[in-house]
Amino acid sequence: MILVLAGTLDGRELAVRLAKASHQVMVSVISEYGRSLAELPGIRVHAGPLTVGGMQSLITDQNIKVIVDASHPYAVNGSLNAMAACELTGIEYIRYERSEVCVPEYERLYVASDAAHAAKLAASLGKVIFLTTGSRTLKTFRDEPSLASCRLIARVLPQPDVIQECVDLGFDLGDIVAIKGPFSQQLNIALFKEYAAEVIITKNSGTIGGADTKIAAAIELNLSIIVIGRPDINYRNLCQTQEQVMNRVNNIG
Image 1: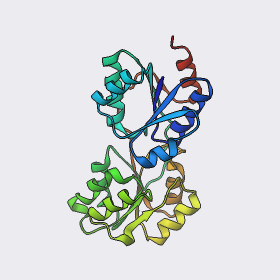
Image 2: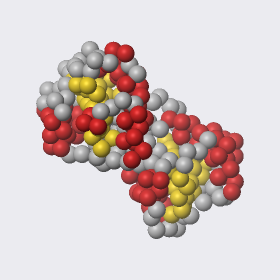
Image 3: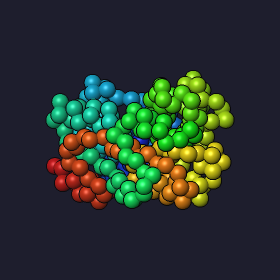
Image 4: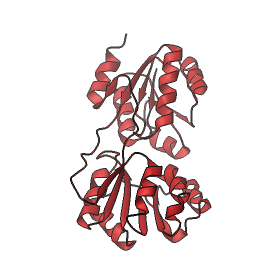
């Protein structure tokens, strides 16, 4: 059995390829929404976060021989837990990570090390901050004192629990854009203009995550952009194409 940590579209696509190659595949996702996306022919699904101990139990119970970590590039804890569980159980760990978008030369583009750094930078760049970084970082921006007088726009998935989280953090309903991406450059332009955004904050989640169209839209509108860099993790067996993953899996005895 192969366990695929697949909280992304390309992760799910990889799981399907492995199943079609006659491998037994289980996909691990965080939420019930993720389960609904991952329930595909020939694939079993585990929904819910996994600690190192929980992952060890799953490895033993399901006779898992290899973990393919295709989680989101910013899902640090899941990757660290998977690497630790693989070491403790002696099974193979393979990391699949999509390529980053090449950050263009643009005088109003800034690179931040993390969300906290981005929040501090944003305060000096404008009063209307359009957040496209996902719901998990929203508290960091709401808690930044220098952003207290700014309008924060949160673009998030249209899930009831995510919207409720935004409300609980103090976002006005008019400042919540609940819509599923990725988005075209034209739609990004329309949304940025509609909300009179002055600063756009994004992660470098690659082309499949829509980072390229967000950056291009912001540049076209001459807005400030903050790109949060990827976490610095020393992955083992790093693959950047699905073909590399398939070859590694097929070579495991």
